[in-house]
Length: 94
Image (cartoon, rainbow, N blue to C red; front, top):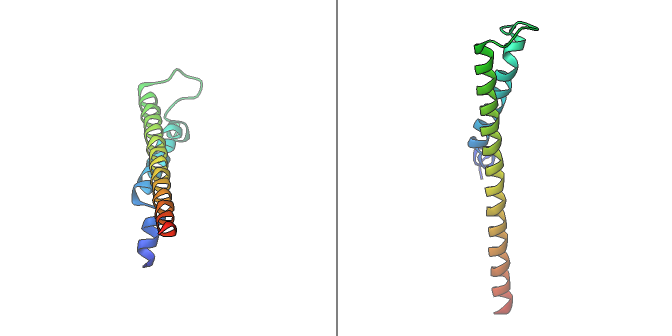
């Protein structure tokens, strides 16, 4: 197995994209305050509301994607283990 194939199996590209989406969401949430586009102590203006909302949506979507990937990977691992146990039992009984 080459190093590239091992890395693809260890860290799938989809997980990297979801992690980058998560980081983008965090940046969108903190950017109005870090870049001072939202005045301190003033009512929220439309631009920061939109930015923080989009950032929150990105975080939720990326976390759901990461969670679903982990659940599906666990399901595949359990199926593989069960198939291996059944194959071992069949070879032991014959």
